[in-house]
Length: 135
Image 1: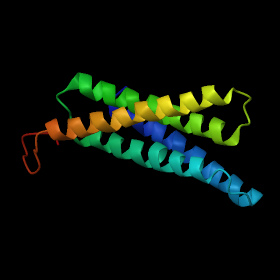
Image 2 (image 1 turned 60 degrees about the horizontal axis):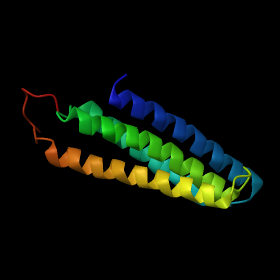
Image 3 (image 1 turned 180 degrees about the vertical axis):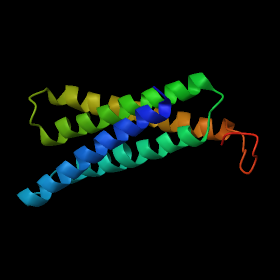
């Protein structure tokens, strides 16, 4: 499966989760999940979707860097949102130290994916308007 498709599927999943969370908060009249809801939609839906488009438009030549980017993006996004939910809501009985470390490590992995993406964009040749290239 292509990098673009992996990121697109994950983005769609986070979009559904974000909409469900928003509907739940509105129906319950409680906005306790606002930070998690915001991260699900901004990092999960929007960012993964934008990165999916990047891989559809450009074909990065640095395959290892692209693979590292995609996997750190997926692992970091899932982990950050799950860790944030567990840490903030506390519905799953885990030691606070464990949930905090999980939350921080996942956020760090996601931060790495943003650094990898920056490197990919800096290393990507500008081929705009060149009909002989794809991207």
